[in-house]
Image 1: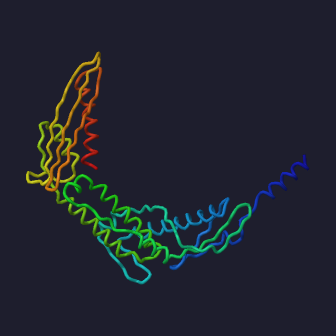
Image 2: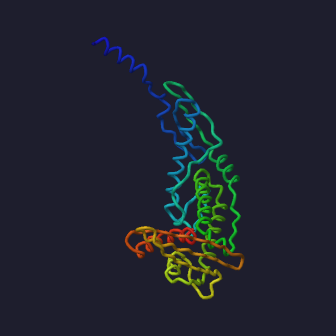
Image 3: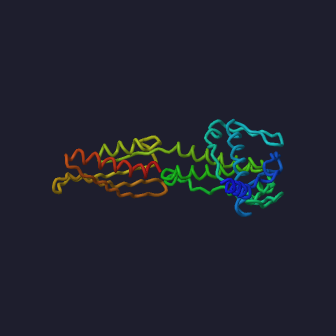
Length: 290
């Protein structure tokens, strides 16, 4: 039994290898380079692990930067933006893909261990040059129907610039441009107004509760709604179907929608109607709450 125990101990020691001494050393980042270590079964896995650790470092920096209303770069110039602009920027980041790095140390033991030196300036320059400012269609109809999609697109671009500036602050102008573009989109959207004409007050009220812009008799967005409600019996079931025909007209075009919402109940038509109305609400939200 003792011999077996000794064999197991020797086997365990032989299978367990400590990382190289340099691997657990803390390497201090500076304004020119980021240092990151990683490990993996292959060389590629170790490098990817190190790059992921570097990306995580930047995420922490970004969150710290955007908790205040202003941030300062290494050249001692400070850029201050409005409370609305900064606070509306989310502090989440996407993984960063670094393209310029140098392997300082690489050692294979039980697995591969690697230490990378990542060039801040070269990576940030490449990312900034690769990032484009979106060309947006801000006409009335497109802005009304796709407002959230447009804002989400700009926010994704802003997130990317946040990452770049956290690596090295040379993409400040694109950040300003994107924030200005976002403010323009919000401003244009808030100036929109609509008028609605419907043969059913319930559907009219549902649409009114969904749309976030103001309702006005002079609204440039004209919404025409025609609703038809049918009831019928099939065996023990009470079935209600609601058909809605929508026309959205603006000075630059129009859009038509045809919705059908149906539901059944073994109780009465009122229950079937309520269930059908809930289905219509969801479909209308998909149109007007884009």
